[in-house]
Image (cartoon, rainbow, N blue to C red):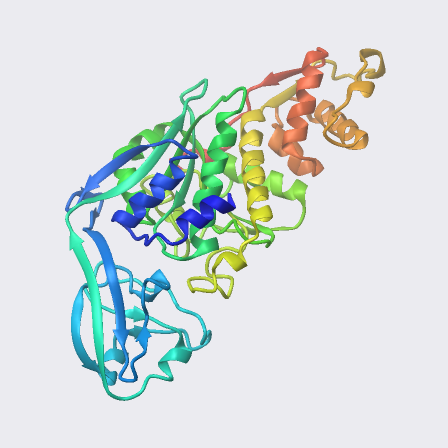
Length: 432
């Protein structure tokens, strides 16, 4: 995972252009995919597909000879989608095109101007304060050209038509947690899901540029997803060592919300956030009222809530690759909880059945403690009334839904439990 990170880090990504495509080429070695192309100028829902951006060179020369804001040193130095410019300007004019963070004087901020043409640089505020009066030579060699917005899509077929969507964005340069952790977790999660011996659901993995990418995807797949999507996860900001954060879907009580919350509750301290249409990422598009898809967001230190966010401080040193590997495991556990979910029915509901004569105690789960496995059996038998699914039993008991699924299989094999289909939650109805 770290080696893949190192290959992705220097690539100059944006909404559309060679840096985005080169990044997909790297991740395609882990997650083979098809590429959906949306030509510049195409109407997608209420948006228009933008031009590709091709940055080649950018810097400015100070009167004292210093070469500043060179994108060869850090791709964040150039305003995203900056227009080209060459010329000599005064310090006063240059200042109008410089972006800094006075509160983080040593950091290079991240700024963009996707839909309003302008040129500019992002520099540390400490550097700004050292710039002398005089003339500055500015070189910005960029080009906006007709091309495509690209969405990478990989589908792993399941036993049925119902789908689970996994989505992440790949359009920020030189940022680690906010940018690369999501695509890396998604790509390595693909490999884990591909290896599952059985998939009830069909899995759709997508990598796209933020906002415009999900808009493009919904313009093509939206009606299909309304009919078939059972659950979805946005994966972002999963590379640091912070506690897990889950942001609920717009529906609030969707299957994915219940699964994620059950998994995280069984694992320990975590944060839950309500859906917020004024703050977020692509879940705002997936959960827009015309689609209202059941898509939540899995993160650690979530966007906008850690000081390094959208600056050069969000770098490799901020990352914890062990934690990122754990993020893959937790996301997989949520998917396994979705796969395993059903409503158990106790076939011997009058009094507790005798487990010893069925050799259940000696063969209880090898993956966890005997005590937890015994608890899971008792909870399954007592709440195995066809009215409570595994996720609800997990909520009541605090036990992992994956453990409950494993123990339910053992009870089914012993002829003590039948697995019925879980009833749909009323909140999951897209019409609500």
